[in-house]
Length: 115
Image 1 (cartoon, rainbow, N blue to C red):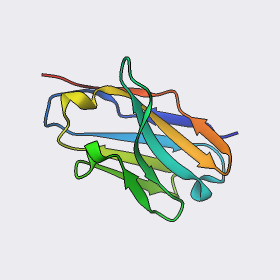
Image 2 (tube, rainbow, N blue to C red):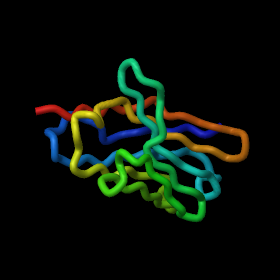
Image 3 (cartoon, rainbow, N blue to C red):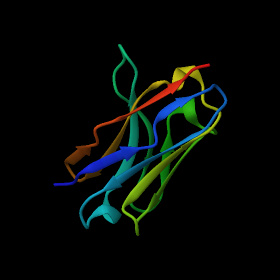
């Protein structure tokens, strides 16, 4: 079983920045694919960014050029640096870890972009 704990959410003004962190338990972090997803009220959960065990990244079109996903295998942690935040980025952000057919989710952290 893998446990994921997110942190770093909060309230920020449009144009501001936040960095989300997700700490994972267990010794298999380095072989897991990691990702960030988000869910706004009334919407389905959607992929924001993913990073493979080899470091390959993938982004939703809406965040390309603004968000950066990274991982530190020594700290069992994945990050999401979010710049130039927009009101449409407001959502609960979830960390995801996957290995083969197994998927694990964190509890989510709220990000609100508002003036």
